[in-house]
Image (cartoon, rainbow, N blue to C red):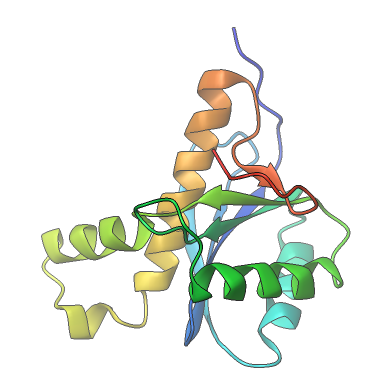
Amino acid sequence: MTSFRRGVRLGIDVGKARVGVARCDPDGLLAVPVETVPRSAESAARVAELVAEFAAMEVLIGLPISLRGGETSSTDDARVFAAELAARVDVPIRFVDERLSTVSAHAALRQSGRSQKSSRRIVDQVAAVVLLQQAIDVEKSTGNPAGHPLEDTQEPT
């Protein structure tokens, strides 16, 4: 049986306009939306407050990689945000591949009957839920944390 590190995790979907935040319960049974943080100079500070509020043991940040596996300006943006957050929290930060999380989030919202316009404010939260749930599922099936640590330069899994 594979082991799962018990504890609350936050999933973060970094966007140009908004940062979606999700969390899971300590047993990693379910990822749920928390908040959409407007993107500003204070975004990392607000996410750091959420890390403390939920006593998160780890933060998983989606790393937007192109479908061909290359980095983009959004990848750089996520890395900058992660560095800003790391300066404010004392918990591990890991990057996870989030190539299709926003696409999956839009599809889920469409299936629930929401228009793209009415979904704009919550799609980042839903994308954070998708990437966090995928990361939890990977750890539960393999026994290893998903992605790679902030300090590591290899590609996420």
